[in-house]
Length: 446
Image 1 (cartoon, helix red, strand yellow):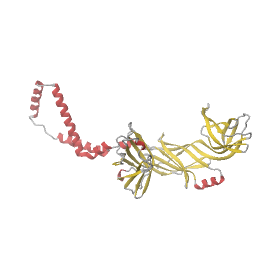
Image 2 (tube, rainbow, N blue to C red):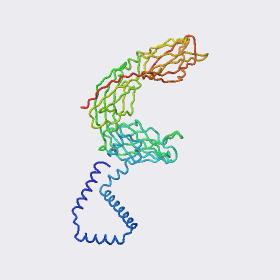
Image 3 (cartoon, rainbow, N blue to C red):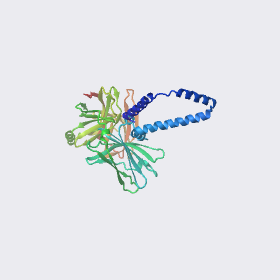
C-alpha cells in the first residue's frame, strides 16, 4: 500500500475520532451501566461471556474492514494483488520499490489449447529497463520449458528485446514466477504488446501468442543520475574510455569503449589484434561498494565497447568513484618457441608474460607438454610444430592450481598433442591474460 493510500486511511480514522469526541453521553447512561453490571455479576457465566466477546470482536473487525473497503477499495485491492509469490525472485532493491508501491498492475493472461497459461502480472519501468513480472503455468509438465525464451515487447514505435530473465519454479514444477528485463520502450509508447510463443520442441513448431496492455507513464520512475563521462584510463595496449553513467531506481549502467573502429581495423591489418574479454570494474558510492549485476564486451561497427551493470545507487548520494580493477584481453602472438626435449625447464616470455615449460615427454604417437603460468593466462590458440609439421592441440588435462607464499596463484596443466618428432617447437598464435590496475576515478555528481 502506497504512502497516499495510508495517508487517506489515517485521515479517515482521525475524522471518525473527532466525530466520536463530539458525542455527548446521556445523563441516564451511568445508571443504566451500573444496573447492567450488577445483573451480569449475579448471572456471570465465563463460557457464555467469552463466546459473546469473540462474536462482538469479529463483528467489530468486519465493520472496520467494511469501512476501509468502502472508503479506499482501490488501495486495498492494489495491496492485495501486488507481486504475490515474487518475494524470492526479487532482490533487495526491487523489494524496496515494491514496498513503496512503484510499478503497475497488469493482470492479463493467455491460455493455450494444451492448458499452458502465461500471465502478465506487473510492470516496473525506469530509464534503464522495463521489468516484466509474469507467471507461466503448465499443469501437465515442466513449466520452465513451456514457453519459448524468445519474446519481445512491441509498440507502434518499435520493438524492445528481452535482455535477461530469472525465475523461480514451485515444488510441483507446474508454475514459474519470472522477472524479465527488456530495453525501455520509446518514451512516446503508450500501448505495448508482449509477443511470445508456446515452445513446440516436440512438434518442431512454436505456437505464437500475444498480450497487449496500456502502459501508465505516470508510474514510470525515470533516472536518479545521468551524466556523460570523459575519463580515460591507460591499460596495456589501449585506452579505456568511460563514456556515460545512467543510474535509475532499479540499476546503474556504466558504458565505455576500449578501441575505436579505426584502431580495430588498423590492428587487424597489422596482425597484432587484441580482443578485450573482461573488464573488472568496481563502483563505490558513499564509501561502500555497489553490487555488480552483469555486463559484457562487444565488437561491432562502433569498435570495441563495454557496459557494466550495478545495483541502484544509495540516497542521498554524496560521493561516487569507479575503480578499474583489472583488464583481460586476447592478444595475437604468432611466434614459435623451441622446446628442449632433454628435460631442462624453460621460461618463455610471451608478450611480457612468463610461461614455464616444466616437462616435455612423448611416446610413439603423442607429445605431452607440462606448463605453468599465472592463474589467468590461457594459450587460446596454440600448435605443436614437430619436424616441420603443424599439429593441433588435442586437449588440456591435469589442471592444478597452487598458491605461492606471496599470495599469487599459478596454474599448471598438460597440453596433449597427437603426434611427435625430434625437432619440437611451440607455435603460439594467441594468448589471453589479465592485468591488475586498481585505477580509481571520481565521478562528478553536479
